[in-house]
Length: 328
Image (cartoon, rainbow, N blue to C red; front, side, top):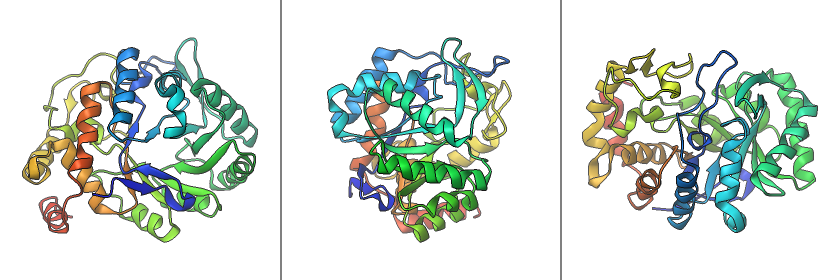
């Protein structure tokens, strides 16, 4: 398959598969102690996994300042080191946090905050520019977002960022950023269980890349989740917030979602793919603009995810068959 894709209208080349760096941020929490991470993490293993991904052809890494309250950015910066120029880094701003207590403290959508947040991210990442800078407040006011878009245009002009995007699941909001000259993408949830037809259409019309978070439905599409099995302490899926479907409070994966995954297993595992590889292959087949960003915490996961690039997208017939099974 074509192993590279262009990041929207920016002309920036990236691998067709990116890696999401939320999980390697480790543990962090809300002020009342609800977990926002994926449990404990081994930083040395995270560094090895990033470097292994690079060796296997992955050149796009998506993080956020708030993941692990700065920790994900620090680990990614350490892992890349002198290979910074070989990769495309996407990070995000808009959330406020305390690094000492690893606590999320809310949001700041003010134009003045953008520059402070970017300066802090550059320092943690050990770089003097970010390739793609993303607004991380999914429901921000559209008028305020238009102001933030103009600040991003200034940052492009100053060489601090190369392009920008909004991480949101609302096509109308994404269109506000899309009106900016250097907007290159929208980051949104999409996977074989959660199609996003309106967002894919917007990306096509506006010439944007579609960066897909939750491409494996928070682990449901790996084929390793069992209904009712609790997860490790500190894993956000044990106490899922409203935006995280497919898991039940303290009870692991939802049986209905697991049944859907099982119904798709034969198609997803065609041509020797793992279920996770089949799910990523669905996204590539869904639109030529997609760049899925599965998470990882180990070298083994990095290798499995990167292995999908050898397999390529599913076929049009397989897409049709999946829609029939899911009654879409």
